[in-house]
Image 1 (tube, rainbow, N blue to C red):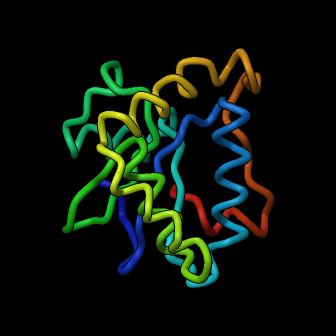
Image 2 (cartoon, rainbow, N blue to C red):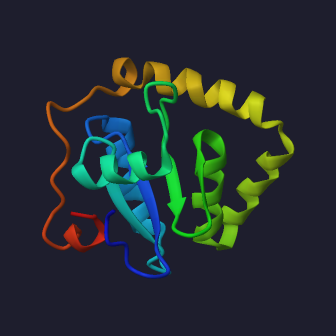
Length: 138
């Protein structure tokens, strides 16, 4: 299993998706409490975590947030939990929790299904800058 620092939450994301990579950069920007670390779904660390959690990523096309020893969440619930961790006005996004998860995930899945067409994709996973490298699992 991957060595995960204490008190960190891991965000697993599609490393070749432009929308996903831009979202990771936004999370880094708003993660003032330094809560999150990242691994692409395509990386060895990402694959190790997916296998450990027994997640079949062929059946879900999703971001995954994993809090070691606690739980993991996917799709719209993962996004809401990430935004809630930012604090301040981002906490207002929790109002969307009143929307049933099946409805939230319908919209999430629609965007996920079209993300390459709308936002494009890279040939390989993004390589973080030296300053950002500490935010990524090896």
